[in-house]
Amino acid sequence: MKMVLGLLFMAKKKKKTLEESVMLIQQGDQFLLNELIASYKPFIAKTVSSVCKRYIHETDDEFSIGLIAFNEAIEKYLPERGKSLLSFAEVLIRRRVIDYIRKQTKHQHISYDFNNTAHDDESPGTIIVNELSYEEYKKKTEEEVRKEEIVHFQALLRTFDLSFNDLVDHSPKHADARKNAIMVAKILAENEELQKLLLEKKRLPIKQLEEMVDVSRKTIERNRKYIIAIALILLNDYLYLKDYIKGVLEI
Image 1 (cartoon, rainbow, N blue to C red):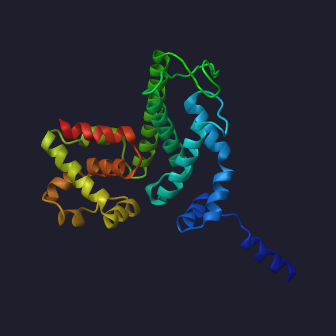
Image 2: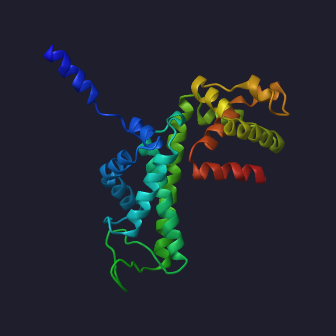
Image 3: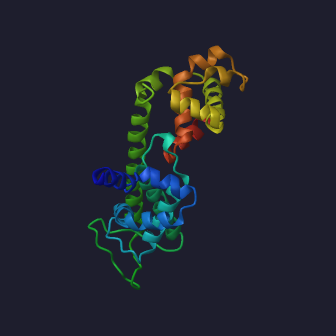
């Protein structure tokens, strides 16, 4: 009897997964939110440090930006999109810190020492360096984020039995056809019911789409793989891949 009670107690005390905790937080558990953020401060500091190329203290402005971004990731996280919370949070933290650095450079010349040494030429906490170094740093950071997006997108495509080669082979050849396919993908991405069908069934809900767009079933089927890929880009937090879609629409 004692053993049974012990097992029941252990079951009740079983640690929640990170994603389960996030679901509870999104339902309003403020205590769990504070607890989670406190637990993941080292993760936030490490992510911010990797962007800034220097050790980050909790008193640094960049760390505060990282905290806000982590909280934003918790609020916006959707497990059905196929990305772990930490993966999503890392991308979001990087982007928010990069945005912060860009804004700072509008008011002063800022860059970072790539040997991980900060120079305080004016006052504590102020980093003064030349513009050229910052531009090199910015390009390097953007390349890293772009690579991360591509790696994640490739993995997501594989869950739909797709690859980049498929997209090259099945991409619409004419600009009008590409725009129509992207339009269909946008309608899919903006409709919760269609989103669910796509992500759960791992296939394009052609019948439902046919009723919602002014495009023939044959055209939707012919561009099926391309439409799925574009919808997945729109449903995820892909900064650079979304720029690609904008570029296609401007052609």
